[in-house]
Length: 597
Image (cartoon, rainbow, N blue to C red):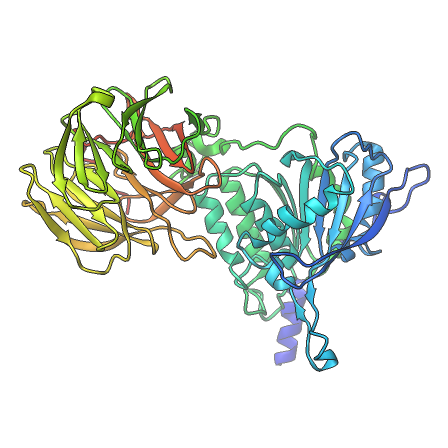
């Protein structure tokens, strides 16, 4: 009876008509089509996979012109793509001849194998690197491609440096490696081809759909293929492997990419974990991936975002905060260091350059001038409700009048150390001391007291008042949880909770929270290692706005006359971006609407 039931279930899951996944004409050598040349090479061990050599092959098209930078496409598990089952070089020949692909160079790399040491000989096993290289959702593999593989090829051939000219493809775990490489480095890859991707709980790829939904979209075009019978069976339609369901998670990836506004296509076939369908649709997939070339791959906001009758819920979509058409712009030049942007009532922005011992002022037009010299290494600046500029330097907290380099200086609190300041409408000042792991408070009369010393916050690095100034948010640069405290009548902190949860980088031991600001909806923005993460009032992280570049953020603030510019300091530069939200100034608290639950 059991065997009969299994047979019936199996029959119910099989297609009524078998799909024809035979290789079509574009996968067959055609007469009068110029043929490219494939040559095999060895890549010596390098920094990212020490002791591990890599075999790779290059396809050079018949139309290659050494005088022109050539587009290229990387295939992981390269030997399989070169083989008779997939015939990628043949497909390249045919599509290039027809004009569906540019004359691109194919880079076919195999995963590394660390050989045993000579003294062990056959008594020890090699270390096979494929899972570590491809299933890893950190940026190690993309760094390997950038620093080791691509430069090795560039020594032989003239490669384009335009990310629109670069694509990357992978099969199974290799599909994860291909997508993650582009995810971390959209400045390197704008096109991803994924066959039977293992976006399941193996080494973290199951977290990608949630990250895609929350993160500002990147200029990446993605083609996904999966099989309905991949790691499923009649009596286990939700997956037979500990990682989960391959086809279901590809669907989840597709849904997430569509939600975020990506240019994506999903081809779900009938096969299992093999390349029968993938090889058959290879010409179609490549033509789709490169369609419109050389037009760039760009980010578009989801079409449904502004359609109230679409049934699409915009809550949490990053484009409720930013616009795709309004990107980061640099303000001023390059400085020795930058941190702690802060806006005044006129729309000017002040920021610190501790290394140069200066504070700068950027006006609304973006012109930057020196506001004050010899700042005592000030690295934190804030604008108070009295219009004075407050700064934290090595000797304590001071304030300056706005007359600039010759302005007066007043000592607010001597002998305190602060990584950030938050100033209330009544003139009270909270300061974070990461060395002592405390939060202090300077009341309007100048009296200093410690208001938090609980030890649960590993590195209190950043502060912000809530929009209505009833709460103080304390950022922790070490862990993912950031605290919310209620402010008592005497300025003390009560009823603290690790309320806001931000996302962490895969390999970083720290969240990197370096600045906090809020908007009129009560959303809280955290400058983190991953980008600017904003959380709803309820504590959920709803979105991640991309950093201006790939460096470390050192501060964020809403500023401008209408507080609708988001400023960020990163590396040695100041940036700003026009946004759809408005910030809250220290001198004018706002009661936000009731939060979504």
